[in-house]
Amino acid sequence: MEEIYYGSIQTPMGEIQGKIMFKTTGNKLEGYIETKGMKNYFTNGKVEKNHYVFSGSISYLLGKIKYEANAKIENGMLQAVVNTNLGKFNLYGKKDKN
Image 1 (cartoon, one colour):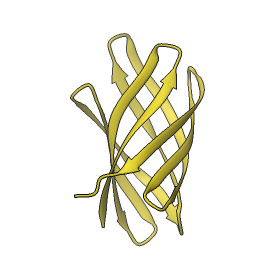
Image 2 (cartoon, one colour):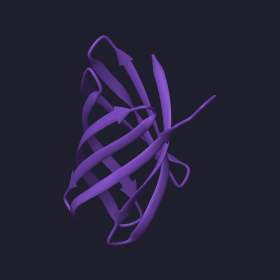
Image 3 (spheres, one colour):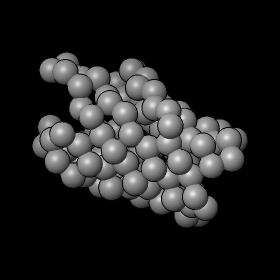
Image 4 (cartoon, one colour):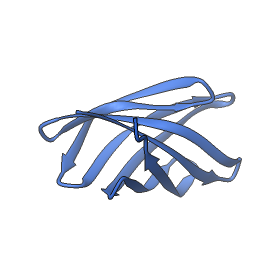
């Protein structure tokens, strides 16, 4: 099953908006985070009920931001705590209705 969420995260560099695509097969999770027209894929994530855990890296002008995300999805709303090499941030998003 594929789901798309639109969200934002506050960082020291300002708010970053983007799109997250989750593809689940059983309890396996993969997908991508798209920001500023660039897709950054992740694999080897896990899903248990409405909890999603995934990690990867996002490319930006000065290098890459490595992250580990622990997310919860309820009623079409995404909330996640994202640990990065630049600190810990909160991510909020809403499911695409299409």
